[in-house]
Image (tube, rainbow, N blue to C red; front, side, top):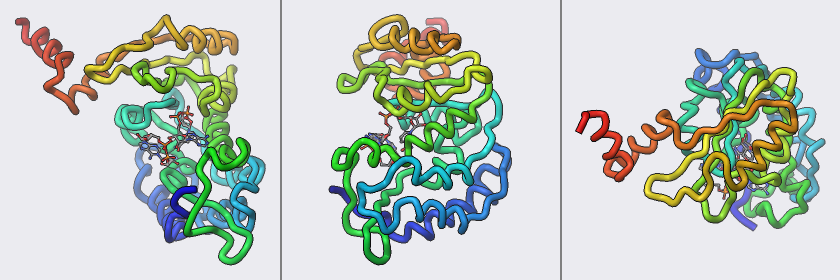
Length: 261
Ligand code: NAD
Ligand code: CXR
């Protein structure tokens, strides 16, 4: 087991909800006014006063139904295995909108929570890890969140994956993206998936567009009737990587070329 439910989770959740609606995404996303304490009640009801692993995806259905929102067209970004770079790239909804920029993802991101049968209905000292509970319980919330997000996407979508992780293939059919997001896209609204394969600076390019699991990904996307495109470290990503590590060899080369040397 790991750390327990985030202290003051109710206040954090409700405070985030007000912040989301009144300030954070005000000029970026279409804001649909929600009742924050009602959302907390529905969220809390899904897992509280249950044993920690006794929670199914349907427990969150009512909450997700109430919290879901419409997305701006042509802006949805999915990610798998590459959290930080994907969020730098999407820039809090300015360039793209991730699940974590939607109310559902924003309220829950980085929180820990789990139930217990006695008062106060949640356990503040220890919660199970993903591997401690049966699959359905460990995926109960984020699977529903991913499904809801994918269903709301309109227009071409972007998927960022990591082509340099020796421990995780770039595309996995058993990831949240593979299990809930790709199958959850509404093909009549989403014509194409633009894949961005990233490669950490100085790292081996284990998988690039056109090989390894990206072939499987192309097949899975095309089998669903969508167009597949793929780019390895496009400039837009390269500049972000180089902003963090300007002394890397790959970044110096870009500079030399730009100055015509
Ligand atoms: P991934 O392998 O990078 O996993 C993403 C996150 O899922 C991890 O950071 C971890 O917090 C969590 N996770 C890992 N194993 C888990 C398990 N067995 N059960 C529950 N959670 C687990 O990439 P992925 O699996 O493709 O998921 C990323 C996609 O799914 C994104 O597009 C995002 O929209 C969504 N998602 C987001 C979160 C989140 O915490 N913000 C969690 C799950 C899924
Ligand atoms: O189980 P955790 O992720 O530790 O994640 C806990 C929560 C998640 O629910 C998610 O919402 O924290 C959020 N989160 C991040 N905010 C985050 N920032 C960077 C999850 N992962 C994040 N990362 C990167 O993804 C880190 O490099 C981290 C990896 C996922 O780790 P893990 O599966 O342990 O190592």
